[in-house]
Length: 279
Image (tube, rainbow, N blue to C red):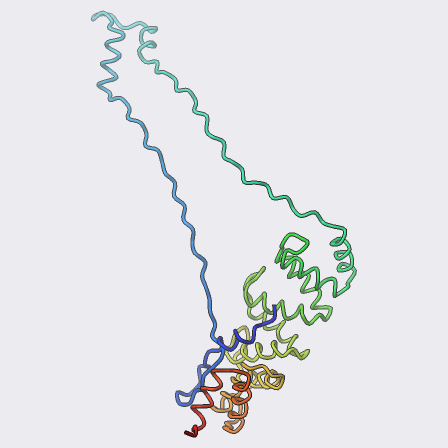
């Protein structure tokens, strides 16, 4: 559930105020997918042809044939008009889907719930994970978020990180970037490098926060010093362009080299465009 470093290296887009020259390459590129809409068709059976009025009249005249000068008796009229009653058609019963029995709550889980309810943050974190993944209990993402929140409020760093991810992706809850940023900030403040890197990206692009490139650079620097590749490359780009920080090509080269040494192709390309290469 931790943000993936390689993924983040492909998800950062250029900030809106980046100049056109020597912009440098960025490591993070967002992606999205949309659900397919199902369609359902209903086929209606065509009604059977009914006899025409003339045909019905001819039939009644043939059956009844009353004398010319006499009115047909009531019984005769009823005999003519009476129509055969259709037998009710018994509809086929729909097959009910198989009933899924809920997983029984084991003594093991009961003990976890009791401990979590009593305020044990480790039990709250573990129980949240079980609900998130469906391990030992029926999967319930909403219940997972509820327990992660309780664990996070009790200081569990991992719960803060997972909440940031779940609110960012809309997993088990409505997508809420502001709430995501709130939990990533708490984790970043406690020193989590991945959360610092993510928070820098959110500040740079205004995702769930008011855009603030200077604040983005501050969080990138914290993450870069802990070895996060995307933060190193993105910080180098900010120094190269003088956005959010004073322009400093030496610092740009330094951070590009740090990221390139860890395999960042974007940092290598940025470095090659910034520094003349020897033949």
